[in-house]
Length: 439
Image (cartoon, rainbow, N blue to C red; front, top):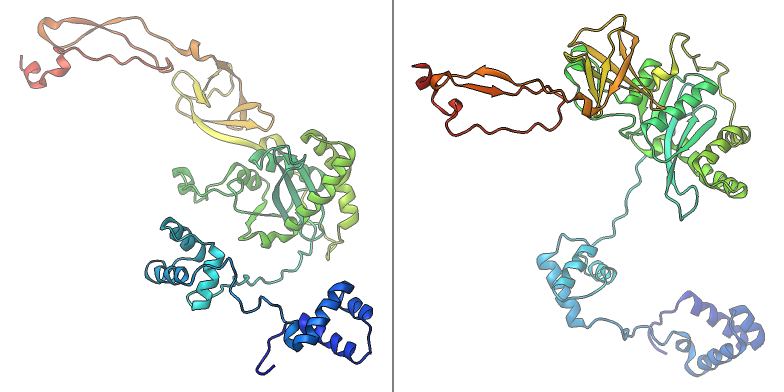
């Protein structure tokens, strides 16, 4: 055959085997084994090769238009629409818009057409360059903290969150499972770490609102020159723990990779033990699994000095890992907090004055303390119904004709939804004050 012939690598290999077969260097059986085809298929292919030469090995569909191909007129219409209206659209969005106009085609088909016409170039996303960072030298110098959301108890159960802490220098890990990645869960994980190892120098976290807040500083914070902190941030500030924020998941890659270890090994361990509850999972983590993981994977730090600090002797952990709110003491020595009315008792020493600030401290177990000058106050909770106090009707002289006496009811704050009273049409409030006082 004259001219050029395009052959695939598979077809070229088949040609080489058939040439050897022509020279009696191979048998049909051996040729079929080398080509990894059946004996009958080898005979058919060899017969076509003998009849048509090299061209008999080329696939018969090569160069022919597919039976499923779109008509040429349709393709030209699509390209025209794209040039006129959708020239800055991606292939996926452009295909959706073309379908709305009755030109139905797959987005990958459109992408191939655009590439062939030079209207679209393949865009390869460049990976962000990242510099390798050496491990910290001391144990407790930097601890990475992260939450791993996963279906820990099976695909038919709701996802839970494993709060994981990993030391950067050694790879030591400590973890617990909670329903969500909340401030309480993060506090409990840090408390657990401190009880077993001490207070770390710094934490490396992401930018979730558990660790950092984007609210504007209040007036007191502005006057003190302090940045606004979350409840977790306040706890770390009391313990002199620095919070370092990571700009990407790769920056805290040690804890991210360690999450994968838990999702593999811990899941299988729970399945073997038949554990299906958060309580059972946390018991396994604290009693065996974390120690087993550390014994297997943890490394010795480069420096022998431990940067963990002991817990301050004059500091109660319950008063560190808690939620604190400031409230103003009202004239009846009560404060309002989360829909509750709390009555400060008279026998407190010192007894705060009305108008002063009271610190409401909510502990992780739900208990609540009122603190004034670092002293816990005695208080009792008042039911909302008991707090509604209505004073007796008193006669009040209102300016008007004949100094009419009208009864006015005074209602104390705390009554609940106060009924609004609409003044009558001839009420003095509706008259011009100059006409009233000119008499």
